[in-house]
Image (cartoon, rainbow, N blue to C red):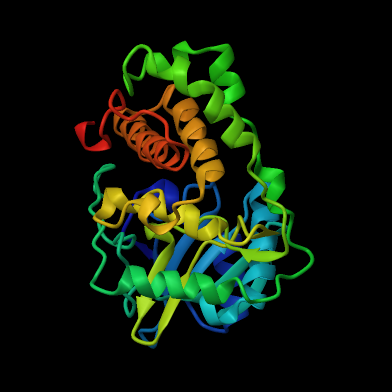
Length: 313
């Protein structure tokens, strides 16, 4: 009998149970669904009869299948930075990835295997962990990416053009004084246009606190579905934009010359915050927008007196 610690609708299908148990030649005595991950892919920590466990991720449609195939290719090339792949199988005609489970022997800053916090889960970095992650990203960038990974530049969509056409998307969020956008917009548009994501560097694509865990001698990144080939430094820039929310350094202190990235991300967060979403998530987008706006302002000499502090939201 399968036991679950979560709601009934997250039970694994019989096809998935059969596929995993056949691949492992072992029965899954308990299936637990963590609150990690934002895609529709099925995710389970499966406890085996000997007390050990594995992590199972199963595709459910064409998009999650593509992501899972990208993830497998990336993890196979970046073994020193990824969980060990134990088996690859299929259920209902879709790929299933089985990896080692680190939920009970690694430290997760975002506590992704603990009880969900309703959008307010506190992230706790231990001393030295941020520096270890910086070092790991530097070493990952030296790994040759598999050629099947997509180009990073394919993720780029201009953001400030939309805001310039619909400035109320910005004004309605209350991020700055009434005249700030008019004075800053030309520089924000120019900075974003200078963004160049082309390159041949191995990019994880989604480095953030809930996609990293720490072993005594290893930093492990999970969720490689956005892996790509592109500009060096992208992963670090993507990480540091969120670190102030978690007690970390300001991004301009780490990457003072990353104005194009900061402008692009600021615009993206503004546009996300302008769309319908739960209030706690809108506030996250607004805080990230402000962090990035202060970042690009510091790099390009834009006025900050009329910009709100992200801590005020």
